[in-house]
Length: 86
Image (cartoon, rainbow, N blue to C red; front, side, top):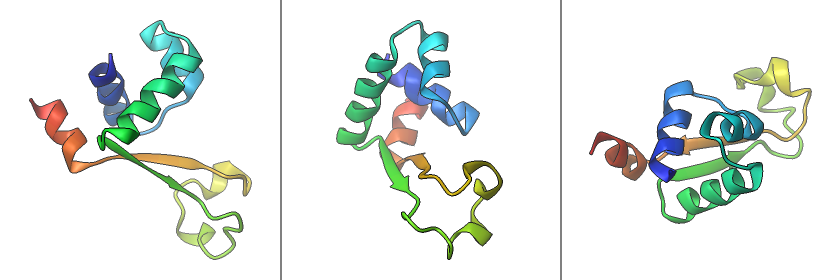
């Protein structure tokens, strides 16, 4: 299931937890736990926007959507990409 979740995130480029839960037929709590495991295992890394993103908004791809709220972004690591390639 972890590899399937990772593949879905990689293939879509963006995701929401409720959509992942519905797509994979699991609970949102299970999605949270799976994301935590992928982070702990080094397959993904998490980046957060700063609490005040006035400096970063001009270069942020999500500026038009976030309304200056904290946006969590996940990125596959080299290890995550290698897992998907295997």
